[in-house]
Image (cartoon, rainbow, N blue to C red):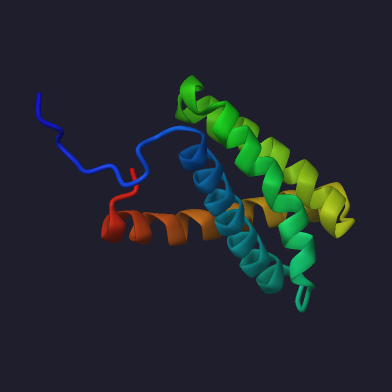
Length: 117
């Protein structure tokens, strides 16, 4: 049977590691943009510290469907944001929702251009 698309990585552990690292970087960039918009001038290290949590949760739960994955990823992101930025619950929830909005606002056009999914 002919392959419908070309796979550059060939799958395997390397593909998973690189995809995970790219997801962490994308989460960190979008979180830093949201935090800069919401809080003001903040160090990038705080976004990098919190970005691994939503990346891990979304990777682990990707087989559970979008509703469960998004809900649990947002909950984990909120906890990571609260810890990393040392915020109370209400600002942490607002920053998490802004992070989700920035993530969607950047992911959808990039997905339409490059066809990630």
